[in-house]
Image (cartoon, rainbow, N blue to C red):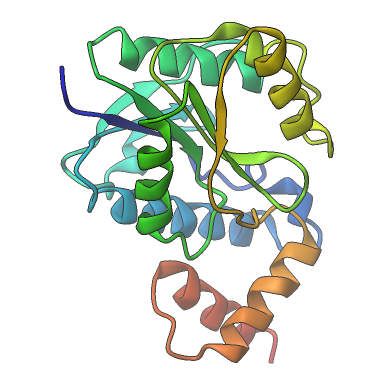
Length: 221
């Protein structure tokens, strides 16, 4: 199959189960609303690309809560214990269908530019694997042509060495990695403060996350 694929990993937005690192700054309901806004903004940005879109969700709540996703998206439950296993299993599931390559990313990416995802796809055309670094030392996107389990094994996720460890793994196995654009995830109160500053400096920004921020700021008086 000549067409490429995209995987969005996300979580069903159930209060008290998602974005808990933002608590107690945010309530459980506010965390869930932010999670849903980021998931929808990211999904609709990805739906503009010329790739088949798959959304793999974890089981915090009923799948009916994902009803607002783009119609073109194909939904699958995540499988595996731990983030590395879930990422590998998702890539293996999709690449086994015959796509020429697949890019995988998460939903903690406010204001995602689909052009950056497309750029990662172009990099992958000349490399064995592509990573888009995040500012915390990890990566917000990984892409490959064939499933490669070792890069997801033994990783210390949520640490500052995730990308470095992945690149070392690639070197040990003779893979040629490429690096795409850098972005910042939204996981912590510090990340939320950064996003508020971005919003203040760019009042023209639109989207569900921006609407959520507006409502949240209004509720704080």
